[in-house]
Amino acid sequence: MVSRKGRPRTTAEFERLLETPDETRYTLRLYVTGMTPRSQRAIESIKAVCEEHLAGRYDLEVIDIYQHPTLAEGEQIIAAPTLIKALPAPLRRLVGDLSNTERILLGLDLRALGKAGRGSSQGRRGLDGT
Image (cartoon, rainbow, N blue to C red; front, side, top):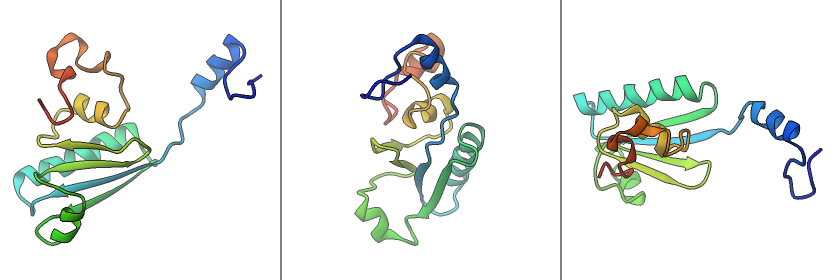
């Protein structure tokens, strides 16, 4: 049984909640610069991660900042590629190389910091790659 505050009262209830599939829908925007090789790699990488970890639970909008500069200006995009996770909150931005799957999962809140990188410093980098 769940308490009035929405917390499980028993271990069994907690374990049952953990087994419940997450139906959270993700809204993502990927800003790229034309169809350069780097842009294509970013698109392929994000699509692969989304299909593996968010199958059927994501909306991905790819925006070419050359074709839609006002959208990029409105989002204050200063580098590309940039992935923005608009929903679920909090808003997150991943800028630069999007080939590191663990970094993407961490940025999308799909992986805990302690699990990313498996002991390497690579998994502990900031979302901006530093």
